[in-house]
Length: 477
Image 1 (tube, rainbow, N blue to C red):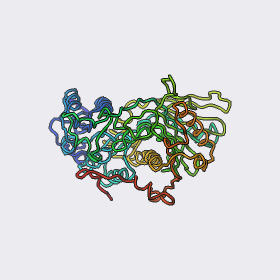
Image 2: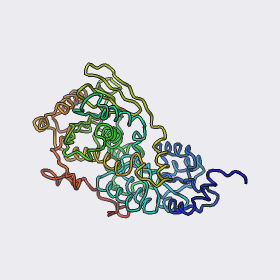
Image 3: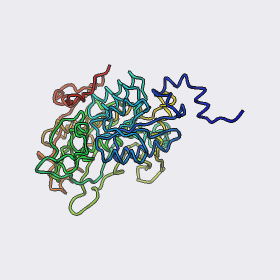
Image 4: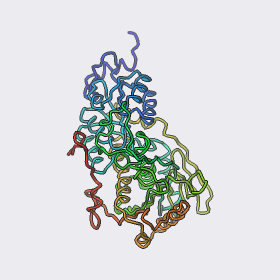
């Protein structure tokens, strides 16, 4: 008897069980273990995903979708994929097994839920949600429809993370962790401020681009990418890079044992640029975790004056520091380092996620083993939650008051406040002014993930957004 390939064997030996795995196993000419992927968005991040998934064995870029016809045409041509303007048509395509959602932030949850309702598995970019409520509905959808749903915090698939956790928690090489700090220091320029609303190019189906967001005039210079800095469609730097570094913190410092902080307290502002954005370009937050006091410090500004780079800061520009009894550990994407209390390097760690996160998703799609995912949707929901809560703290703030800021006496918070005061001063911005907002101390109920106590009503207004008709995120139980 002639030899048969692995896929031919799989096709004959697993046809019956596979019929429950993929919605379209009878596709002509396709091996039973091949997976056809649909990509919702054809922007730069989606393009990177197309390349990564296309490089995996038995994975095909079968369909692409974007309301921007210019971006759509390029991707469809490159991969000879079926092209859709409307994501609902791609989701309904029986030839598509799983989708990648790499849209604007405000589309992540609704696109993922619609796909899972149609029986598709989902890889969705970070941040999972634009609000806490819709993130929970996405978790509920994955469980209700028994779908594989991975969130794109790709550092979770770097084997280095297991080495770090062993070093910090099993070996306790630096002793107990006392405090933690997260940084995102990355320079970005202003997005412009128009006197008249931006005219949307006729090649863009703007109704589809907006989807769940409100139809408000845009006064920035560009439609694409700069939506990050508009709360109507994005989550600011906190939801852009903050989710990566906070996810690393949750994973390596807290070992995912802290779902959400019990209390949150923060400050920030959009200063120096006078542009059309409304998310903070300087943002610093204290998280009361019940164990290890934690802060995050973000800025998109330079050091000031003629400087082109970020201001000086402890630790990595995009990463975290665990301050321990016997030294400190500094972690960031692809590497880490441990130092003793005298600043002497003890050990280096190196890694790199590559396309492991995409490969991990595909393995889970084939096995149907949700627990094998490195960032299951619930894990992504919680890491995104720290960012959503930090943004709510900013949105509920009032002009900064030094006395109010002093209600947190932890040194790690007072140090960040002092650093940010110096940083803002370099841009002729006073910390104690109406340019910088300081939140009240906000308390989160761990049973409901809602705010309770003083100022809860104002904060809970941001737990769920208002959706445009026809694009409502459904409540799923």
